Image (cartoon, rainbow, N blue to C red):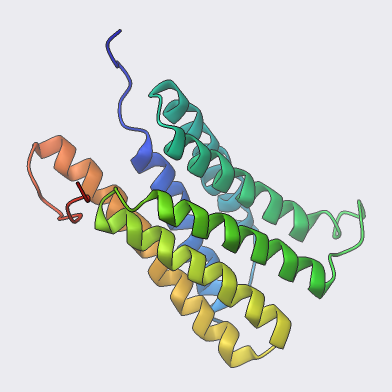
Length: 188
């Protein structure tokens, strides 16, 4: 049976990358957390990535399906963690709870990074920088050090920008049928 689906990875990468950049502009202290970041977390970081993950299932791409679906639900759970206490649904999560949440996502992302070792260098960088970001966020919450949290925000901006670059390369290289943005050859 012919594969009639287009490549869903750029949608998932853009949903992840753009939302990550915006949240980490906040983490870097550039502007406060507000409705724009939360809306991006729900709709583009969350729902769009879940859609990309479902499309990856149709393409029989287990890695893409697990990655995009999981990170889409990461964004939805993060927004819920931030908003549910303000709506009176539950108490705000404690510092140790958020640290555990971030460490678990860091471990998951480290596992996923090993799954990228046969992918492009661009994709490898996205997952490696994301694993580092999760652990840095956990350390920042553990120490409460505002300077470390600001540095972490800048690392997150780099991580998100790398996902945007990976998506742009896949889109433009696919449209033009040649390398417009190099992504780094995958390992054989």
